[in-house]
Image (tube, rainbow, N blue to C red):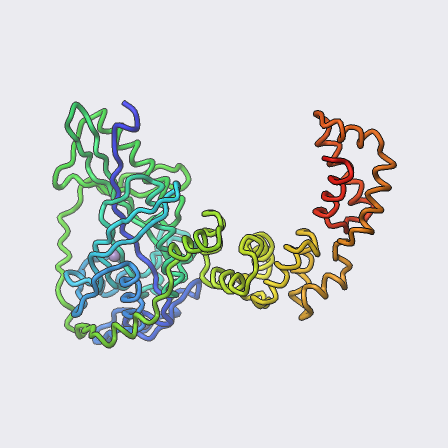
Length: 488
Ligand code: ZN
Ligand code: MN
């Protein structure tokens, strides 16, 4: 059998950490790499008698995201206790949303490698609190750090609509762009702001009937690479297992796996999905949430053009490639900066090159975004224009760009100061061309003969002119003069 005989079916559960200032149900500030147990209070420590208070900002972020994911927003929702016992969960229950998620029945559109898009249905979006962390540093014991306990998490569950590891990765990346554009999460993978749990199985076609393999869930993946690789690995593993055993999907034979990042294999964690009894019930310490029309409308004013839409607009309106438009829309500020610059009348491709080839590099060195470099769109547009007009070379444009970070002079003036303006005076350039032609009779012959050597000889003559002009000749004009003199 070949790969084409089975279809991969994947649904995804994603936890996104929201960028609120404080935790979900108390006033502790969110922490990263702080001293253990330094960002805790009686509520997130789960001390008896301490009462939770809902963080309205987290609810608004959740509604905003669910709206961007085309979900139906619940008019009435509540908080439920999900009971389980684990050392990093001091209350012995997690506050979550069970039967009334804040958003439901939505979809996300993801870009495919062939330039098309695909709609993946979203089953539900709900809010909950994160647990703490068990720390295994040394010795024969573990320690518990509760700084993370109570951090607001948005859980997003998709329908099993993805059919390849690439699609799963595309969804994860698209979701990262969306939450960043909305400003609801930093979505920093290194800090564990996004965690993925794919549910994977195969539909195998054989002799006119379809066999389904048991569903496996891979827990707690925190990189795009691990997500993509684990899904691809599971597909192959399940297919081999099916060929070996013929075991098919039936209720209760779901398995849970972990991912070994070093060996790049999935590792069995639980043979059988326990008959989970989380004993969900409404949290009596928290009032239900009523989302009225007015509140919803106010939240919706914070919606913005979403990245995929912006990407396709950059392609259709400005003629950019899918790749360039994709790079520009990885970051909302950068995308807007590009858009604003082009709207002043600058050439889109030129501006794109200045931003993606020069701007991003400088911004990375400075540890900021391109839009924060302090070069206003009108000034960047001016730089694009003098480059387009052939006043300076593309190489010189990089030098001018760097100088613009410290100087408020116009790009034109900076180019002058740095003696970077190209020579475009035809009379002056013609003199140089004549000198080069006289001194290189053989190359001139080769060009005129039009044979195999013609192109190389033409390049050689161009090079000679550029050298004589100390690299300042406008190459377009030189090529024009050379062409008219040699009939090439
Ligand atoms: Zn607290
Ligand atoms: Mn969850």
